[in-house]
Image (cartoon, rainbow, N blue to C red):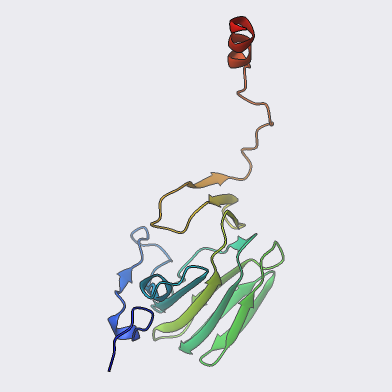
Length: 174
């Protein structure tokens, strides 16, 4: 039988330990299925999150939409101002926008295993309501390009830091 680059078994997808601070309430393992099989407009990752942990901080997307399907385990989903118990067999949708911040925490005594599928549209702005951050991303992780996080309360005016010196230089050279 033929092997095809767009077809793979989950056991063949590299397992990455998520890079989180030591002692953090975040953690888990991720398998980037979509990237391995050549998906360009769909992100697809399989997560294994240990008891008491969440893979990501509470966040929302302004551009991308996500969907989760839980294969094993139980957890509590924070979505907006609600907390919802979820378990194996649950589908979850996160439309983009400020009404759908979300975070999935493993509340069981075994691993929480789920598939997360997302659109991969850039540029993307993400917000992190618990920490008052904004993330600006122009490409997916690992592809280079601008990816930065800022404190939301450090707003500056549009012309802040713009002296106009270059304009004066141009006017003098004409």
